Amino acid sequence: MPTITNDEVDVVVVGLGWAGSLMSIELAKAGLKVRALERGEDRVNADFAYPKPADQYAYGVRNKIMVTPKAGALTVRHDLKSTALPTRKWGAFVPGTGVGGSGLHWTGVLIRPTPTDIKLKTYADQAYAPGILGEGMQIQDFPFTWEEIEPYLDKFDKICGLSGNTGNLNGQILVGGDPFEGPRSNPYPLPALEDTLNNSMFSDAARKLGYHPFPNPSANVSRAWTNPYGNQLAPCNYCGYCSKYPCLNYSKASPQTSVLDALKRMDNFSYRTQANVLRVDLHADGKTAKGVTYADASGNEVFQPAKIVVLAGFQFVNVRLMLLSGIGKPYDPVSGTGTVGRNYAFLSNGGATLFFKDKHFNPFATAGATGQMFNDVSPGNFDGPSLGFIGGAKIHSSQATGAPIGTSLPSGTPEWGAGWKEGLADWYGRSMKISISTGCMSYRDHYVDLDPTYKDPWGQPLLRITFDWKQNELKLQQHLRKIVLNITRELGPDSFSESFLGMDSHWDITKYVSTHNVGGAIMGDSPQTSALNRYLQSWDVHNVFVPGGNAFPQNFQANPTSMIGALTLFSAQAIKDQYLKNPGPLVQA
Image 1 (cartoon, rainbow, N blue to C red):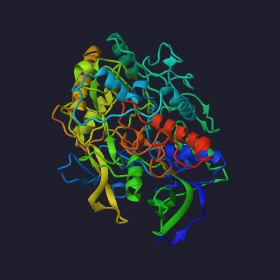
Image 2 (tube, rainbow, N blue to C red):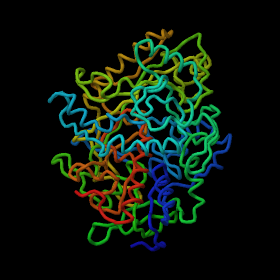
Image 3 (tube, helix red, strand yellow):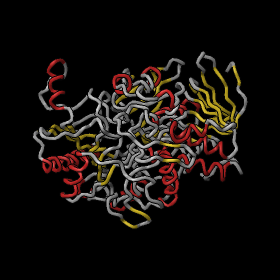
Image 4 (cartoon, helix red, strand yellow):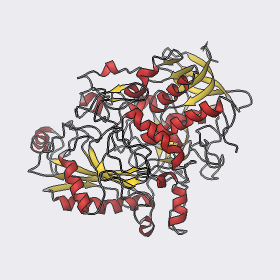
């Protein structure tokens, strides 16, 4: 039993990253008493004053602001017959921790999904003949329309100070933006970031080959910006320290720069750090939550009573807490029953690195989202059905950092010692990348559950991932390889290297890909195929809401942050407008 009981609050929010901070400020503004619990340490803007974050070894190599493998360990396997083993070192993904969460270290690319992405099942049923798509694929539509979610995408754009070129304004296609984006109700708040040499070279070549490049949508703001919460962001100074780093210039949208400074001034909001939530506590009938129990920094168990519980941690954290707390039925891939754990999806990347003896790309002068991309190869924009796969990718040339450790060097360059130093001196700043970031479908045998063997320091089971590449995603990779190599040939480098998945590839947990993990507690129209309804409310425990990447029924090729922000704001609005007036299920099963 908990040894300490806190004062009751209206809302307890677990996790203080993007979802937690947005939910907290929206509900606090409605007059509710809100308390957030963050398992990591406090992180305030003053901690990241120049030049503290400009330390590649600390942040980029040692993962200073990420959760440690011990504190956030998972187990991983490729299939149901294999034994999962625990992560000892982060590889394919690196979750954040502490106040700000992964929203503190993200790169800042803030691109929306397309209308087709949110209605992918509908598109697939219309465009693909039976038998074309892989056995066991179980993609689903998001349970809302573009018109319903777009106002919240727009609101999150303004919270972040989105910088870029508008492509579709209320149905009017504009030159310089993405012609394939869904209609925007308002233009981008700010103009695009400054171009770099690789941007202009890539966009010229892509346009010559018939594609439609546009500047990466950026949450590294191009101009000074005051957002709807009254927080001020400074114009980016292109320091090159974004991905894996806190911003030293108040220029990258994050919970700290965009939400928390305003939220912390509210008398009805408070937060606790080093508060590791162990479970959601339910009433005897199991239909409502009465609060959460967490372990504090001294190891005490503390009960935090609350009328509403919001699980707003990273995707893995949210799903694991639901499983540990008995919220919803665990998913069984054999019978296909249950919903909590269902539809885990990751993504793949790849690309080519182009080396030019006569070019100087100045990679040290860059923002995290500096680059150009095109969206021609996303579902509905090309003939995927004739190619035998579904999904797509953003294809881009991005110059996200100039930090020297990890700089790509030509084939044959030594990987350490004097030869590596000589290669770095010769080739630093003389290469550019053409990269892909793909979608990933959901499958019956890709899921997360509680590991039967391995436990955390509190004696609770670790979360287990069962995932591997399927033929659909590998076919997509091979198609994208052809496109990237065509652009490479158009650019004519002195040499290049490439990295794509072959048709016999398996998921490699040791090599970094992205931290865009989704699924596990997905939203949908039916409690038989989803854990959450359209408002991110648990079908089973009506005063529990679960915003985050966990809600995605599959992964699309756009970065997830825009949709996570919009879903959280959509859910918060429903709580304010509907739930508080009549607590109970907001959607009838």
